[in-house]
Length: 53
Image: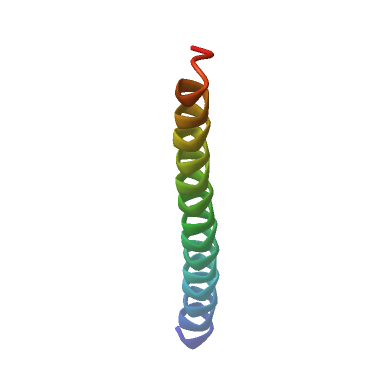
């Protein structure tokens, strides 16, 4: 029974590490999306200012 538990623990550890990596990736993506939105707002403001739209 003991080896099985050890195996399960290492699998659980793997899963938790993957979840951590995914969460970090998601945070990075959220930051990039926020930056992109801010840039888009700036570009639109710039274009409206110069009546290019």
